[in-house]
Length: 468
Ligand SMILES: [Zn+2]
Image (cartoon, rainbow, N blue to C red; front, top):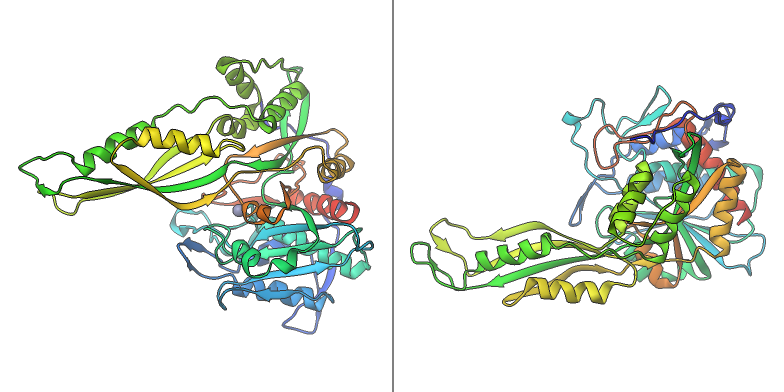
């Protein structure tokens, strides 16, 4: 592969020593100095593991810590949640012009489980070493929590007021369904989001350094403007139960297996939505590659030419349906009457009805389905003031920035906020590490984020939030 991370002569290092803010530790009276990396490390030390299905270590301690910091800085944050274990923090920062529509910044406090025996360090120690912050959540997404928090504390220390109201939500439960976090807030406290027109959150705005056809580096900053919808379904085959030695039809297990074979192996048609088309066209143009997107072969070649930036394009040029859970039978000589499976379906913006109709045809006779969760796709304009301001902030930081829109293959809390009429973007900015370090280990092992990227990311975020 000819596309690799390129060494850049960026000026991030001069910022490394910058003290971002002064704050009072809420446990002690002595003022302490902290930077965004230390803050990120500190947040990692709160084990906020979310095991799913409502089973979690809880976000309460981390939320109380953030709540304390914000109160200490003079804000009026709210500590909220459906119970005292699952907490979120919401604060509204009044803008200079309160008539302007507000902007929401959302970042989740929970993390996915870590299996410490597979890691080369303690996932919850929050260590800073060799230019990285290490630990579960370092890049998903206590980095953004720290950057946002640092910005608010920085503003409090310097007396900075943003142009418009900024509502910040540090939420619980993103790594599951959001029932204890974003969805709960939207359902029980919609008043917190009054006047909010747009939101920024997870995924997007981070530097991806590619190599163009001429060998020169291309500094790509993909900003998420849409997400495929999440359609999680449970399917059930019903047959005749009986003795395993006397086969009878219909057999629920056989019915289910045939249906899953059709659904799981279906080749979804190539569907270039405007966002994905723009992502591929603009990225390949920046690389100097002449893309021909008229057919499967041309699209495949374009995606290949995009290097690491092609991965997300590859999963968003079509819908997908993946069987993930199977449940049937209890004894080898008994034919069960029912067999069930769960299927993870992702539908591109504008394709939900068509996708479900296709699924029903593929499932065929004798199989019923129900939704485990139904979160439609989101999509926001690239022609908006918001997108222009994100691009402008990235370009002020990196004059060579190529800012492109993209569609996420999975989902975030944006799906919870979008039904409030909020235009959602994935924008958690990060500059490139001058020594080619990169974030790694999201939902995997040895998760880490470069300190330099955190520092530059916080400056870009602060610049954007003040100017937008
Ligand atoms: Zn996340």
